[in-house]
Image (cartoon, rainbow, N blue to C red; front, side):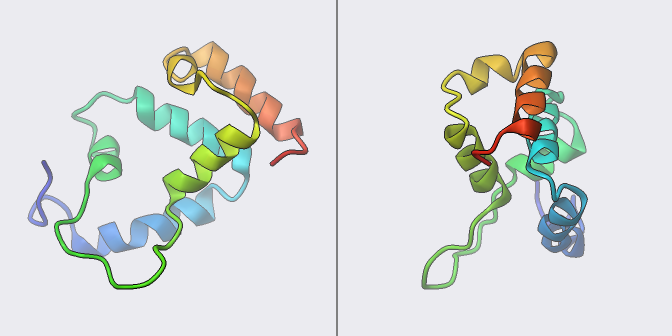
Length: 105
């Protein structure tokens, strides 16, 4: 588990902005999603991805998370076995190439 002493608080708050600005294209987001899932568990990027804050969220409708957008893209493409495909780099590459030409995204 990661604590605030391990990561800079400003980095954690800036991470969604960084991810959105770098991965504007949905196919790029899918490629990064697969890359992060294949990373070793001790990787800093994977630790930040899996980190969950201990604070409570404000009232109201929750904001869309980056992961929610990627998973909705996966369901729009009607990919049911994405957890199996993500382990295979070649299969995931084919899916990201399909996403580049897909009109459903």
